[in-house]
Image (cartoon, rainbow over all chains, first blue to last red; front, side, top):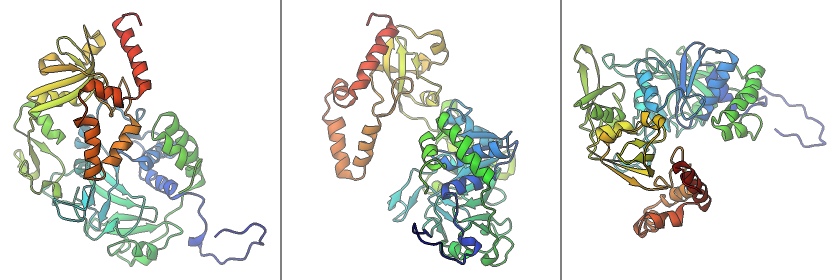
Length: 272
Length: 193
């Protein structure tokens, strides 16, 4: 949609969905994740989780000043001497929100961090595995799955390997469950009755058709209506972006919390 | 796995774990099964067998001559030392005594079988309190690990054909590190530089 210098601006008919965004996918995700953090609760993110780390700090700066945030690997925001204290806090039921990602996610909110393709014993690709996810997904009161890409290879009908299960029978000891999946294209939500992922909202400039085309399973909107009726996600506000690019970026740099990433990806550096 | 080692460190035969039910991790494993809570049979969870390794190999900052080991920071390595039958700890240096602060956080000698002075023993990984991971070497390792042939070449060069630890340090530890660590060592023991 670039204009050539010197050209007179042409008149374009734009639908609201096609208006140019002033924020990157990364910033969009950080803002949407931050909205899930509630004041007074304890929220955490795991290893290699730059976007959720930014989201946690943004939530504190924006609407949740009393939020307890736990960022694995951050000297300033990890309150424990080793990781076992964090795992046991979660297992005691004191972790309200956890952000997790997976290589594959299926319509039942099972995720896969172990392997893809081939045979069970000889997969085509092997990943690091679930780490503590096989436990935290079952004990965090709410888990939010985030993904930086929304594609058919990510959102599959059924994962190749279940690292952690979205829902389990009532007799299984479980303290919490996944609630939403958030990508640069859309927010999906677990339907409490069907236990399947529904389409809650779509982020501009994408449309429900974009989402359907990039999801490997059928989607309906949150209230059972067709996917096309899913509303648009409220976009990042000026306030949220200003805080993210300002004090949050600053804090991440000065506290050594994914400092290089924050410098490059939050407003000041390149867009992606 | 962590809970299984914790159970091993406690000396109990098994440990309940919340999670993993319905995951493929449980397939083909006979050391994790689903059992009802004996006090509340309406709920079930995974129960994992305790794990007691035969040998634990740990690396720490320093040890005194009795085998009390200062790992450098609080670490879950203590659980590994407790759960394992034979504990071998390599340390950056062996000293006459640890100071009071270090003793309070030390792995007690009663849990340690053997200590070995191995400066730069963690390389190419880092040793907190002494040196960071060697990013350049790690990148090389990752590249070599892409296929069997290149990895074997890497192993041959860095492990199999290296005669002893001194030769390894000579060949692979960055020169700048060796100068600064030598200075730190000398000032610790009080001997003149």
